[in-house]
Image (cartoon, rainbow over all chains, first blue to last red; front, top):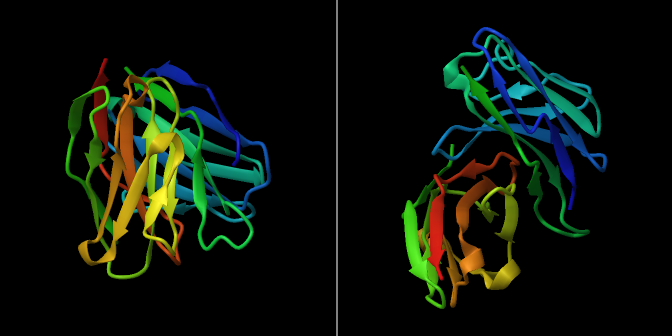
Length: 119
Length: 113
């Protein structure tokens, strides 16, 4: 399994500002993912970040609002831009790993999340 | 796109009771199936997974799940719960040739001592 850390763990921000969330993993991974978990709801995939290419965004999420960087195989950032109270959520980073040689699928491991409150 | 439904929003049990959480998905092809657990104040952890083979899979902490292909279901079970099983449980699905996880809405399980 992979060990993932996120910074900050939580923040309270004013509307109109931006916050950059960092995700660090303890091993090299090809694919990293960013999710949002709004209060009382399940996880929704924002985008997939591959090293060396632009992130792929899911329907309803755009690069101008959620720019992502992936400078190397162990690190990624997600920026929440021009925030509004509707952006108050937990933002999670995850990575994909094959659980063992010969395994027919991949698992995803999740970071601890960043709890964002926008006032 | 696939979707995942979890039948129960909140389940309250007494210790030693049996637990079964329902999960159904909609996707016509081959899938990989997962149950994740989020204990209070902790991050999401993988409880168990199904890729192929024996449809009855065993995970950590005495949990198991059964994949019934004809019913598009992957229900989670534990014969005797403990207070420490209090958590939120998420079912997730991805097509076998894809990596994008689709999550159910989650079920909050409260175990009373």
